[in-house]
Length: 52
Image 1 (spheres, rainbow, N blue to C red):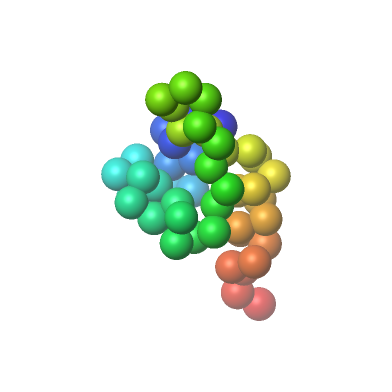
Image 2 (cartoon, rainbow, N blue to C red):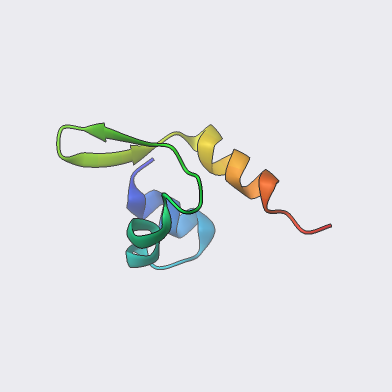
């Protein structure tokens, strides 16, 4: 997923994804100069931060 995809999926600004992805614990992958995320990494983040 691109940072734009993640921002749409999480309903946050793209700027927030770039600023917070490390602190959120998302595992980013560099493809050349581009940042990408695995969908399962984003899903794991949501699972870890779900409020009961």
